[in-house]
Image (cartoon, rainbow, N blue to C red; front, side, top):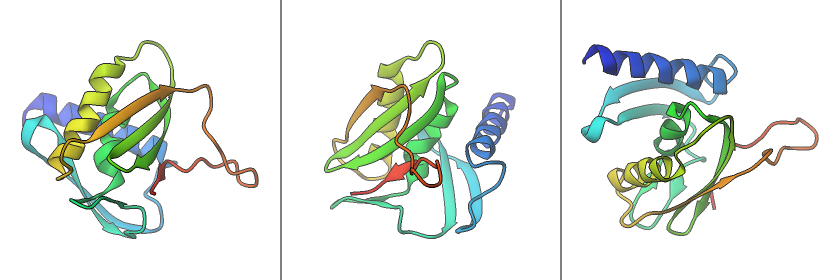
Length: 143
């Protein structure tokens, strides 16, 4: 790995920890990062599989979609809803965001995960939908 890759990896880990409240959720037993083609990082996750996005051609772990969102400095919060052919991204943004580049990164990740011709839409929102009792937002919502 190059120094740049390590810096990117460290940034990604820090943002992942911040997004997850400083620790992995209880259902995730192990999380390992490795370089993948095209400069992407591939996450290997052991734990609950009920949050997988299941498409006819592939099952995609939410980290495939979450990684580009966590790497985008302008994205403060996000929520991903699975669609029939891809994903709908709702993002709360601080500052400038290259929405086209971020959408392309998510689309590329889905394609690399085995989803042919993925369709990805991105919406800027002021707030995310939250559970009225807990105040928590579901980050990944399968069909």
